[in-house]
Length: 212
Picture 1 (cartoon, rainbow, N blue to C red):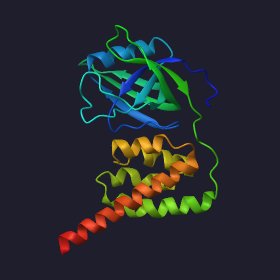
Picture 2: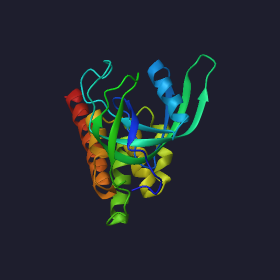
Picture 3: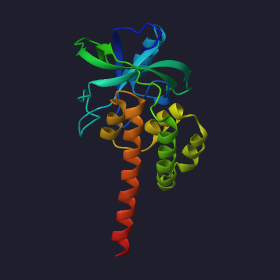
Picture 4: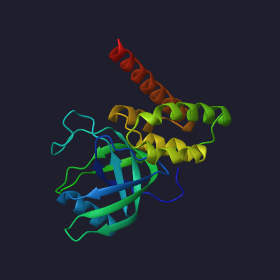
């Protein structure tokens, strides 16, 4: 659990395919009126936002269903643009489970939440896991358009490497939720390796089908 005190009631920012993890850094471009209001009101308070993924095939409906587990983020940078938008940077703090969404008159959604351990524990067999992760990443990253942006992170320490790859690799919403819900870093790194190795295998199989 984080040392800082976190509110029991938080605003929710539901987005499909956007993952925030404890310790991660997430830039956001805010333009929709209800979320502009949400972030401005958060800045007048504790500057805490609950990032959570939508769980339906229609994520942009007015109130799409969401997963029950998300991650709080602290607003560490913000900038208002000349045309009324906001540029926000969140730092991931702590995972949470939604206890109950509030039925109120806000433009945006709010919920009572219960906080979970961050999961950023020391990894078992760290050297072995680190090498397995690097091997999977070196096979997987060259297939990505944003490879040049992600490749330098391979020099980072293990915990940062796991967080950045989990957040920024183009996994599906379901896959990202699987990473978020990992009980600790040992589980998360195994899941991350599985996802990258699976993607590499799928790419190879697709290539074989094209050749044949």
